[in-house]
Image (cartoon, rainbow, N blue to C red; front, side, top):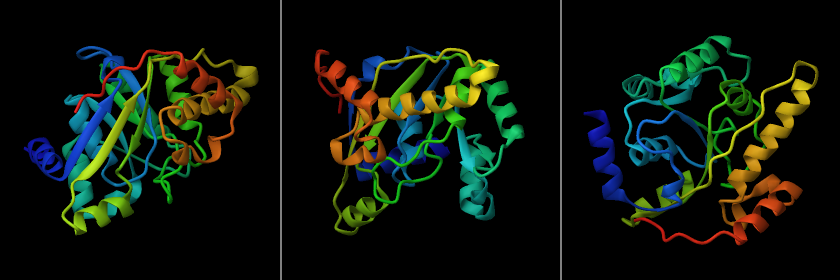
Length: 229
């Protein structure tokens, strides 16, 4: 019932255009989706776009304090996590759930960007992806920023949401002797792949990263698929 109501509300208030839908693995494949995070509605769009019952999503512990957000997180089987400390309990839950299958949706930035452009990515997402050895799907989202959402809805305008889905990639296993450096490199790779799917004004601190420049050049050589609305 929760998901039915959520989808109905989002269809009413938003027009969603999706590019790269063919890059999503078919059916009930297990994978990790990494995305930018610009607004409170981002998780809702993820649930509606994927239309799966086995989505795995991390929820900041602070949302336990509010009844409505706690109930909603529990309704979609979210995993509460301490964003500021190594939450081993939450990590164990993630890996147990992935062993059973599912789609893990992560925002490496760990919190919403205050100005819609990319901020520093944390190594938690790259650690999970490297340990799990699963395909990683980069996703770039625009049109869901909190300020933009409030402004458009205040004037009875539908949200114009754009979701760009990139090609899957994987990360090599971690090596004990150079794990910290590997994680930093993996995080940069993940963030640059997200940045490559976003307009220039959204790329933030990764805008001038050499890896992003390479990825943009590669994307320019790829055939363009028509968007799905």
